[in-house]
Amino acid sequence: MSRRFVEVELTIVGRAKMPVLTGGVYRPHLRVEGGEYLGVSFVDGPHASPGSTVRAVAALIYDPEVDYCALLVGTHFDVLEGPKVVGSGRVVRGPFTPSMTTSVHKRTSGHRMRSISVQVQPDRSPSLDIKELSALFQEVADDHALVTCHSFDSGDEDGLYFNFTFETEDAVALWNDIRRLVFETPRFQQHLSRAAMAMCSSDDGWDSYVQLRHWDTQVSLVADNNF
Image (cartoon, rainbow, N blue to C red; front, side):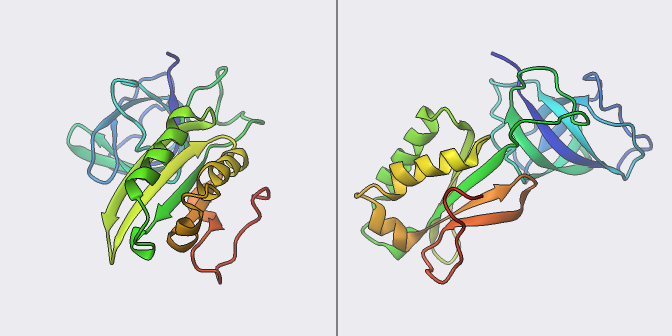
């Protein structure tokens, strides 16, 4: 299996000197919201001073034995050396396998990784079978060639919610398939019109995004083939 990488914006503040971000020399851990320590080695990045924010590429050195899918586009993380937090960052390109050696400073073409996230609030449509819907989203993740990584989670904040997030290099094509396979399926079409919203991140993550679907008909939506 080919090694995968992430591209990040990185700020190191807990060191007297900035680490070397090329050649796999610097091997910290990344941690998302107090979660698992994710070991990486930085293979491409500039020389900089502590406190500077730089863009760099890191190899996922324990993939696939360790699950790195928490490193979705737009995700913020801490940088740790042992137990010490020495910096922070944000994912700008999720786990990917390059077709050839690529420098973040010389990349001139190719799709950028984006995320499509669907949130479903089943209380808005009480007869919705959320287990069946979750299984359908899992089928999309397992069978779809455009999905490079996925993450599903749920919670309860003024009502139950379920998030289904997919990373892809072709957001328009993937969304059109999700729309056809899930949103327009007769079994779920009416339920999702009352209980779901869908968004797509920009190339720079979730700092800006487009709205694809929303149960509130007053919310402005982007055209399905124009984002």
